[in-house]
Image (cartoon, rainbow, N blue to C red):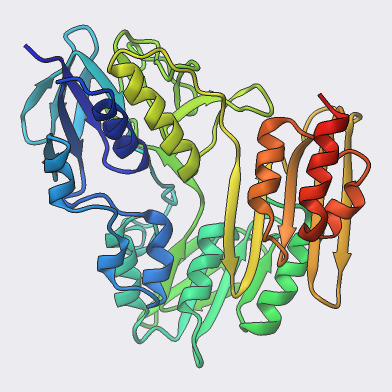
Length: 421
């Protein structure tokens, strides 16, 4: 009887795992379970759909034929509600129960919901994580003259850019003192703030948090701890994500912020693996077990977990934080460790700034190793910089040239390889 491989999830990690399993040529039976009743799509593209740059059809990564070609049994539109690692079964919300010989947990993450609000108001706040979320925002933005967005991270700023329109007032309420506080430094953030406010009219409220939201005059009144009040017709929140692991019994599987995994993507339970935005594994640069949710990590973790479920013994080298995006027409990239914490005595930074071109570039080094970079506007070499960070290479003797721009970077890497082991 063929081994039963069960995959919970249907996005980057899940697809990569299924591909790796089939690439090994075995005859395993693969079943894939997903809460959403559709083929896999890219959450990264939802903001492009939101602003009308692409149709909904362009979001999808595959169609029903793709699953048939890989001989995958699809159970879409149902969700896992309980996992029994001793019996090796998963209970679904439709009452069904699936058995497995090896299981991959790849259910990703969901938008973090705001707490402490009136139930009616809470149900009306929009988030952006799924296709349905994007559709909901598009529908509610029509006719909305005042939009208040809670948060100043990537999702919040992307939504703000997407819904900004002539005659529409868009305000982002940011609890911290800068935008993208988890990704970039204050100097780069200030340049982004100036660009957003100077080119789009989007207002940014810093150092303020919401104390209350109430219905008022057909819309909402947003009360801030600063004493200010904002009127809104549409509310959107972007306060980060939380792993989708409610179905996991923490007495059976070790969990901290996410599901703990080793370098082979194994959980603490036998025959159970985890990959993607819910997997808390080793950060390649810090050595700590961390949640590092991004598409590249999810794909690589899924590939390795899938191969190991099918009998391989591959190891994951570790996650690397990475965000590459365009905010209001401004390219921004952050890779690796961009906000060092703890003892920073051994950390040094090399900066380059050209105000005339609006360029800002910063390299972060520790123990003479490149560990991170923040790039603004001039980001064409971000892939090369990422390779240097991941490979532990140092462009020796030419850091100022590297910081100044990509034209000299390839040569700098050559010199780095010659000068550094």
